[in-house]
Length: 321
Ligand code: ADP
Ligand code: TRP
Image (spheres, helix red, strand yellow):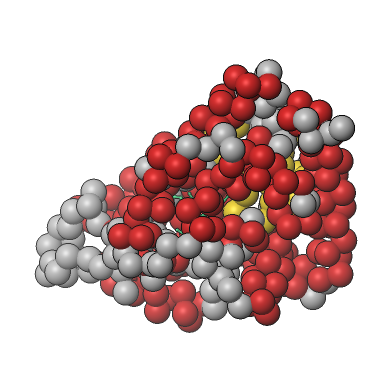
């Protein structure tokens, strides 16, 4: 099966990104044909400082390699290195009714928050459809917030295929249900834009400071505590196996420990969990030419696929004469 996903290099990776997307990709590459790219064009909807975008792109490449994206198994590249996607984006625009984009939640949410609407924010799902359809993937692993974008890609593909024949494969999204939405330190969805993230590669002291800020109920130290709705517990459970979970639940039920103790425990669990990845990260950080080489090779492979597909599309649409 062919699995494809893109991720925006728009900031430090957090554990929501990890459980909602990266972990699935690392798993998927064991048994599938996997394609993954850094969506730097998409990141331009929020990052418009050149030096910053370039730095974030390199940082994201290093992070993903450290987290287990294996360039021998996964075609891994930077979106803007395969320009065919922009040509397809334009072609797909003619198969995208305005109403389809006007109904997109992410656009509606952002404009409702007062973010000034520009064309890139509005047409974002069309570029995402091009990213997907160019590579004929079967499955797109995403977090819940991206489901609608994959559905838009399907709608566009259906319209295009109706006119020109079965050129595009209809993609399916895949959401890992039990980790569908990772909560942030305030209990809302963890997201860079809500300032409630726990980063994967933060400094140990910073990480602890963030974890100490997790919002919890005020309950006297000696009293038993509820774990079901506790933000600390709900984050910890992503990292724990069944026995560790039962242990933690009994610590909540027993009383005698405060949320501060559970926070310290959580900080240790997270720090331990990413130990190996931190070491790998340090290696790539100091070997950036090697990282560039990996990305170039990925772009070549992805580019070959993209050129083949664009040739078919150009013929079908009459752009080839
Ligand atoms: P952010 O909301 O921090 O800006 P992105 O939009 O860059 O995160 O998301 C990158 C990937 O991680 C997407 O597949 C997204 O669905 C997933 N993701 C982000 N936050 C979460 C979360 N809290 N829970 C689950 N998945 C998430
Ligand atoms: N929009 C996605 C996000 O913000 C990133 C993305 C761009 C993507 N193109 C894609 C994800 C294609 C999957 C497939 O998370």
